[in-house]
Image (tube, rainbow, N blue to C red; front, side):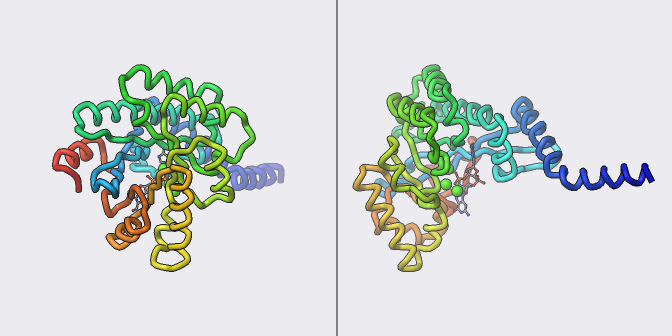
Length: 277
Ligand code: C2E
Ligand code: CA
Ligand code: CA
Ligand code: CA
């Protein structure tokens, strides 16, 4: 009876703690990925609608797991965010993307902007702006060619550290972008409260450009941004129709499968060599 009782306890503990055990295992694997060179960045080109040329690229993380293969960001970024590991990932992503920016701009006739996604948690760390400054300082890259993308949820905080980091980064010339714009509850307030250079209209709104309501939301985002001298990127643009609607509405930049999928550094070089899509 005692053994059966113990088994029963074990079984229920296994059920309740299963998710936690998985998470701990995943954290170990992310740590191994960082030291074992399993992480890569892909770069998705962004089209400048005014010039009809490349504006820049967004760096998107990729994990090639030794046994599970490609793990999408949705499979590990949230877990890394709950632990401190997201900061190591973020620092690695900044360093890697800055090196790529140096290469892209070494012989480019026109400057290529490089955007990196930064988690809210890292933005709250006192040393973050200093880390970015020293990464940039080790190169001769114009800091204005680096954009940091922050989701709205990252700005919902009273932490003075977040503002201090954003102001310090902005003073270095680094560009700030609000990602997934319109999906939070206080998008408009952030435009006023933080030194924002760009907003990225979320794909869910781009998807609704075929309705009057969806169009109204996109139009008001663009008008608001432009009134504040903030530039507008539309993300998840998949069709020629969406692209021409956005051009009509005065959107500045588009990003999505219609222009290009995210590309490996080699594929990006090839893409640039033949002059675009
Ligand atoms: P996000 O920053 O909103 O990135 C856009 C996502 O949309 C990317 O997914 C991209 O591959 C995908 N996408 C681009 N164009 C299209 C399109 O036309 N249609 C559709 N359906 N999707 C498109 P991905 O690469 O899976 O990244 C998902 C999220 O993971 C990102 O969303 C971002 O929040 C996060 N993430 C990616 N890389 C990093 C990173 O280095 N650091 C951090 N903290 N988060 C990252
Ligand atoms: Ca992004
Ligand atoms: Ca986004
Ligand atoms: Ca998104």
